[in-house]
Image (tube, rainbow, N blue to C red):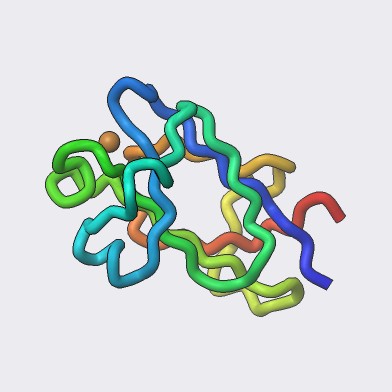
Length: 113
Ligand SMILES: [Cu+2]
C-alpha cells in the first residue's frame, strides 16, 4: 500500500506561480496554459503516486534564468533508501521554499499511514 505525502510550495504569489509539468517541459521551461497554474502562494500538492514529478515557476524567465524549478521522486514504500533521509522528511508535511534550487530530491517520507 502506498501512502501519500504532501508537497507544500510557499512563495510570494505576486512574484511566482507553480506549474506541474512533465520532464520534457521541465527541461525546456515550457509552460502549460496559464489557467493551469497554481498561484495561491501556499500550494499544497498531494503526491499519491510513485515516480518523478516536475514543477516549475511560470513567471518571466524564472525557470530558465533563475532555475526556479523543482523535481521530486516519490519512491514506493519499502524501497531501498539511496541516502540517509533529511530529518525534515519525518514530519507530516514536507515543506520547501519554492525558489531554492533543488536539482534532485528523493522523498522517502511515508506520511498519513
Ligand atoms: Cu518565480
